[in-house]
Figure 1 (tube, one colour):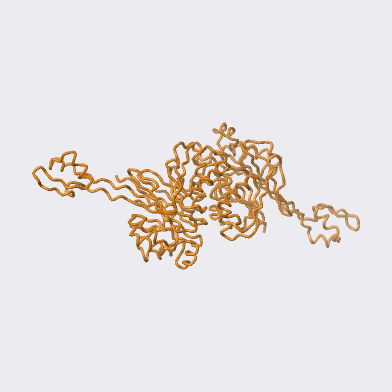
Figure 2 (figure 1 turned 60 degrees about the horizontal axis):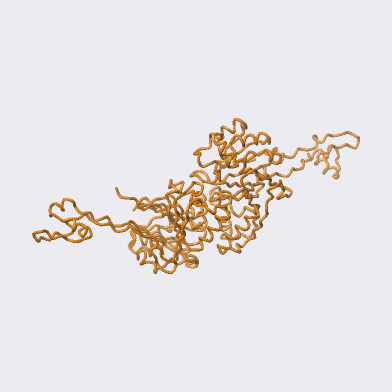
Length: 306
Length: 306
């Protein structure tokens, strides 16, 4: 069975919620680890609704310090404390969020929530690997918004190919060669015959990737950071009829998002962060699909499996 | 047509939300004026869902400074600011909430939200009339919780009786007497006949009243403040099986709430603020009804008209 790489949308609204849409928050489940991306008001409610256990969340990424992207954080921390959490919570955000959260926690008499919160300040000037291990690499990169704002890219690490066990016997492959073959080497038998790598291995599954871009104006500068992602979330706050407002407020239209997806050669585009002026974002979707057909709306409580 | 006196429940959960229940918030519509009582996380979302226009809310009452009763305030203020509100917003709360909110607003660069916020510190030692005009009187009174906590009582002002117009002609009542008759006086005709007041007027409708008690341990001391209310909201965080935890945490059981309603001779009891440990609060309702039959659950998004 393939390990999960699943995105769940908790909120698809922009600054003001609607009766159907919460502000921005998403959860990415990578191989059973849950990453919370932005944390608008109501995130803990939406986590419950999507049956995502709070305790599984170990890392939170806050793109920027507009309220609709972090007002839900203090409520979530309070609840984690009430639940008796012990494990560390890592928060990647603007360094100022630490000051803000510290003030709130002191005010609430929650100086010691019972678990450690580790703040990791983001770099808003250039791309940076913010977390890397054997299985996963997470990179932050600057977006183009009214205030300092980062996107995030999540990449599964490349896996080695699997050697076909029968071939070890067939060609009498010594153990010391197996590592090289897994890494792509051909093999020369004792009697000098070259066996091409492709006959010896089952190639590893292509590593999966997801990138999150909210909030941002149309910004080609970030394309190198999101090139080739399987799934790209890009905000599309406005329809093309509001293109001027989009530019003024450093937001994007559906078309902007689609152009970026196209240039970045993304596999699929998800749009969200819709202005509360739109009862339905269907026309934004149509405008995006005209340019990048494989576009979907990231509705609240929808999930996307890679 | 009778003017509205309608309570809408926005949240019926205690500290931790469930997938069905938001933290505490209620809206009381008194004669077309909307009073927000507590403002847990997600209040603005729930206001939208209940089609209550944010701009109509002019007064907010925060019972105490546990997060589940005020975490939604900064989001609501931000949204009001984005909407271009101009009218004053009055907030009745612990004086510390002003410091907290000021810090948040400065952090968000919202020093001037475009409208005036007027904080009114509550008195947690004794009952106090906090707002009174011709139509309405609002009183705060201390509850018994782990931290300073107030309940609120909303009373329609008594109305004068309506004089039966035909009687003015029948008995030749001079204009100067009308005020007295409306206030309850009998009338003596020119030929000395006493006409009892009840024959001259249609009595005014009984003034309606609502009292809100959350969060509190069983507390008979507050009974004088809530006596005779038509509708009493009293928290019932726990079932009787958790009576010890209720006492330790200064919360109430359904039975506690019912006993208070009974002693206060309330017309009807609404219970809420249920612990997230209960999937359904039905058994708490049953325990309350055994003592005070006219009890209902104040489910999220339910309304009660007086």
